[in-house]
Length: 477
Image (tube, rainbow, N blue to C red; front, top):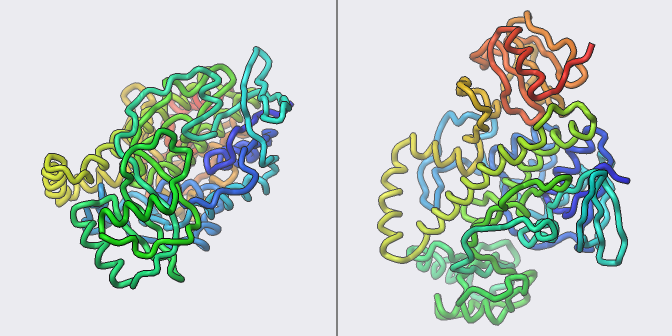
């Protein structure tokens, strides 16, 4: 029996596998596709995901394959000047194609000892008091103590559980693909720029050697979006907007996506949980989907590992849904709002002009950047907590020449203590204690969860002893 079976080997599943293996959980990842996907759905990582990679010591791998872009006031394609002094040590977007991100995360999981099986499709799930059974397409049955569905928007796991997936169906659909365009590059750029003055969901981005990434509105919403479009469909839609198909030919891959928004009614059913697109789908505006799923995994991994290790306090695993579901709901809202602002209809365009004026205010831009990049996320821990509690802490430099995120590579909790008078005795097997007068830290001490969110701030040992059991279970001798 495995400790955890993960259905789906995309970025969410791989990130979760790595987090579990960091804590010696026996993990099996089942991915239905025999080969890694070549589709470039996501083009980059936002600040919070970049921080997550830094906290686990793998950011350099991603930087080697990516390009840093300044954080501008982008929202629904409304471009404003970049902001100074964002609350992060990584004030950039990292441009990196999703297949590369997928590969790097899968390599990380495998390095840590996760077992990954490709060409293994989960077609059924059942559970009892002792564990979960996963039925594969070839008739094989596997057992685990827990199972996590990271198997996408059409999740077999979610459907097997009977978890409702309410929301709004797609009203519009886009065609996306990579292909050769044989027309003159200058003519393609000029025509594309002219169309984008009124149609923001259109474009042809050169990738080199005559290959372009083409985005164009579909004529209608397909009955089955799992069926990819044809090159002829792209040609027809291009002719409808620019009067020519630009010589489109030799597609590398073609896909379609809609603007549906759906959120799973619950993220947990007994020993089965949902993460990533299996729990939420939304329009691609803002490029938040992959990032949201990776951050789901980062939140869930340490909690599920604690449950398996036997030290998790009561209700810890349920905080995964309590914390992450509202974050997903906010992403659904802001991505839907962006899609509305990109509509060519007169009403949405009037609202777009108003939003563009509001974004001239720095406070508005900070709010929107915080939403899209997830650095504005604050988990609700209840009670009258200081504003810092529930938020992730940025990477701060310590007096001894170290960085905070370098101290979090183990995936344990951390007490960063400027006073030197506090103690985590009884929890030393789960929480590291670092005494360092970090000048950037404006509170006496902070207790950080393994995901970097602040669980407590202050200087009172009694308060700390009240808070430690909430996140790290009963103390030892």
